[in-house]
Amino acid sequence: MWKEEDNKLKRTFKFGDFQEAFAFMTRVAFLAEAHQHHPNWSNVYNTVEIELTTHDAGNTVTEKDHQLAQAIDALIS
Image 1 (cartoon, rainbow, N blue to C red):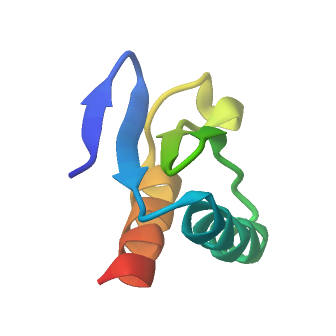
Image 2: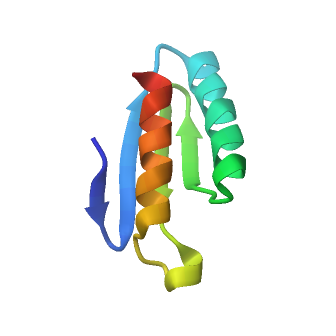
């Protein structure tokens, strides 16, 4: 579930192993390019943490963030 805090949408994703996590990140990268909206993220082994914020809007959460979050969720549902 995405959580909004500190002017960011945040979510942590856990996978079976590093390879699954990296494959997910690759799919998200293509989505981000398509949306022209890129996440702040980190990956440690099987965990991917994503933060979305709109830099052009003063680093606040906008509809662009919600749209990308929904598209990311669709990858795992």
